Image (cartoon, rainbow, N blue to C red; front, side, top):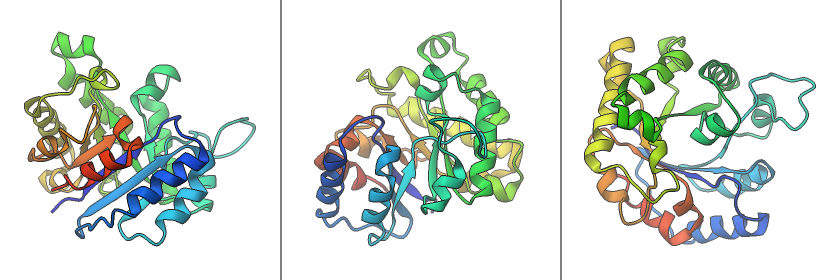
Length: 253
C-alpha cells in the first residue's frame, strides 16, 4: 500500500512555547500508526531543531521545513539552504506551496532547482501543485497542474521521482473554508496519477503518495482520505489544534 501521510503545515503561526506544547499534546494522545502511515510536521525555521528532537523518539513521525532556497550557498541574506537543513537532520521539505508561488513569485523553474537540491541532500520534497479559482472556472485545471509537474519534476529520472511526495492544493479552497468535494478531489488526484503514469509508467504512478491540501479538517478528513487516490492531507489551520490534528491522523486509511 502507498504511504498514507498526515502533514501539518504550521505556516507562520505559534510561538516556540506554543509549538512545543502542541507537539507534546499530540504525542500524549498515544497515536498508533500502521507501517504505511506517517505524520510530518512542517514547522517554522526557528523551531526545526526542537521539532526534530521531539519526533526522534516517535516512530513514523518526522519534522519538515516549509521552504528552502534554490541556491546552494552564498550571499543570500535571510535565506536557508538545503545543506543547512541536512546538517540538522531534516529529511522533508515543502516545495512550491501556493503561498510561496503567489507572494514570493516562485516559478516552476525555481521549484525545479529546489527539488534538485533537496534530492542531492537526501531530503524528500513535498511538492505542491494546484490551480486558482479563475483557472478552475475556466476548466483548464488539468492542463495547469500537468504543466506544474512537467516543468518542475519531469526532468527527474525514475529513481529520483520515486522519492517525491505530491500535494494537490486547490488554491480556491485554502483558508476560505471551501473544500473540494470528494468527487473533485478524487478526480484531480486521479488525473495527477495518470499524468505521472503517462511519463513514468503505471508502477510509478501507483507508488507516489498524493496528498490533498485544501482546508482539510477533522470533520471532513475521513471522507476525503477514503478516496482511492487521496493518500492523506497537507493540513494548515486544523494542524494548529491538537484535538483536530489527532482526529485527522486517525482518519488515515
